Image (cartoon, rainbow, N blue to C red; front, top):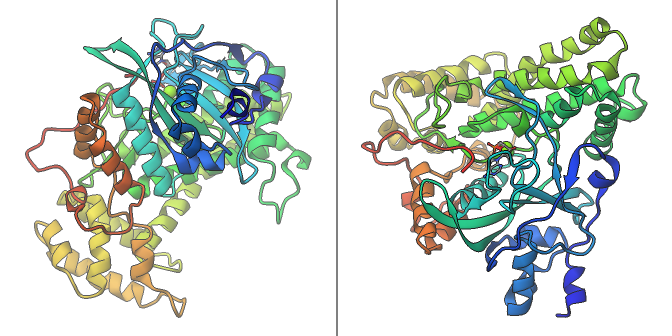
Length: 507
Ligand code: AMP
Ligand code: MG
């Protein structure tokens, strides 16, 4: 393939660069010593118009692809830049964060007509690096790849992983590790922290430009059937905020419904588009534990599993503060206008969460007592440390009278049997005539999640040069609902003796 053809492999646009002056610095990546493509997501590439099968099959173009996706060479049409943002980290505002080790190459319109950021992480230092080296290492990059793709397969809005390139250099962490660059695809990388960057500098014009950009890119309509276009609404910034809050409520509900702990819900890790971002210290719970925390630095349990909705609300309040000057000239009046949206958040979140729980329990209609039914089950699970993922799969068997799986998960199954009576009566009140509760439950309750010990096992092997366990785990977690022979070891938690699982930020 000629170089020209290669250069047209991705058709870049640069709307962020063109419209959001003041929120970025143009940047270049490090020339990787010996970039080598170790993983590419062909199905995602296809949606971006990138013929990765063909490009990675030929040594010459595979090399060009690796160089492009390490940040060393800038592809035609791209205008690489690092984004500026601020952010509350563990509750404390840092006015100046920004992409310390990342580049936005540009945007590509995918096959569904959606604008997607093509973003490199680990491509070298930028003006935002502070004391960091601008690098990333293979283990954490593969971890993000695995978990982001698992989340996508679990029907959770998320940034995606397109490729992993190893740079050919060693990177110093607690020891020398393999340097790597992740190519991330997102609906955008605009964060609550991006708004905070402009607002904390009193740059109201920039805040407004940013809000207008986000409305056009992410929220062109709010409930189109009952409302006019958001831009024509009485106060489009209030509607914009309401739409962002709604997306956050749905996102957190989805996390909770699958037992996901994000681990670092700082405002710079909260995307306006409502996708999950930053897979540094995240983990899935095994035994149901509302207090679950995995991150080594979250000693106060700020980002514990059960705190995620209230933290999302806190983060939204920080976004609301940045929008006040756009909502009304008088600050008090702006607060009065925006407060009801914040006050509605918890109820909206609860409704999304409960809708998810109904599906998990095979319920197809809404009754008032469903909340108590779901909470009673969770309380039992917490008390008896029942595996969250396995229990919901076991329930589908219990409907058919096979209770041995559920029984094995409870130390004392008696309370479950009592609960099961109410649940069976509730299922009998499903309304859709042909509703197949078992099929629906098995389409929403995963059999395979990225179990922490399996993730670690795969990453240790990968750092030693063997990607086979990574590939095997990836194939299971990206097809999470369908049982597969020979993959039983991926179904359960780590053996009971294992020590508490700990995750780390910024590796
Ligand atoms: P994170 O914990 O990944 O959300 O990152 C917080 C901030 O630290 C962001 O501004 C990152 O760009 C920056 N950062 C993290 N790791 C590095 C690194 N190795 N070099 C430079 N900046 C970094
Ligand atoms: Mg981050």
